[in-house]
Length: 235
Ligand code: BGC
Image (cartoon, rainbow, N blue to C red; front, top):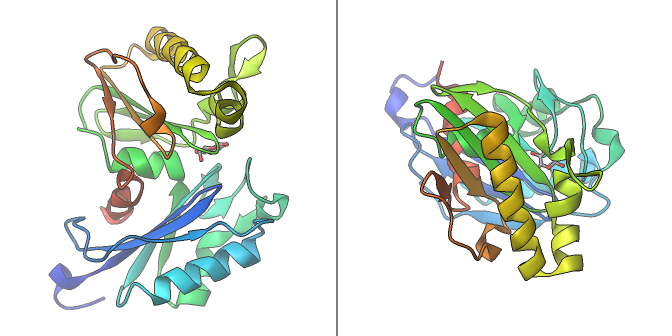
């Protein structure tokens, strides 16, 4: 550990179905570098995705520790359900392997959980959903995370899940107008289910939202996916 804690730099990494992003944050979570992005290689096996992170990391300069958001269930640094990545991620110890590659301590959590940590106010019931390749979700009560909620794979309507109805594949298939109508129904259904104080919506496709949102629903910028990385080192 450095003597001067104030100079600790955290490399924050967001693994997505279509892009892998990285940026360095200072101890307060303020960005210190420009966000780097590379396409997620296909098929997205652990080996090629880790190589992509190593390339991105090298371009980000100095850092002392690493936070990673992964698009699936993560427990104790091990990835469990890579819905939109290669099945070799099932039971993969990403924290340990990446730590060996980068020679730095690494913490890994679900990508929607990390995005939420970068967005929430820390009061009341706060729900976060992310619209991208998949449908991510994160729930917080007074700032405490209920990890790995995976709302996306639960039934929404017509026997289909939130992800099937609102993920990128659905958006491409049905177009923005219909997708917005579905999203409006999803917001109502989530409000009835969680009675949240605030719902945050982020992810690469959130820019396609075209409707009047209720007052307790907020759009969050893309960068929140990386900003949340600082919270992994809070204790
Ligand atoms: C995964 C979630 C993830 C979401 C967004 C879903 O398919 O199951 O864990 O948060 O995609 O990437």
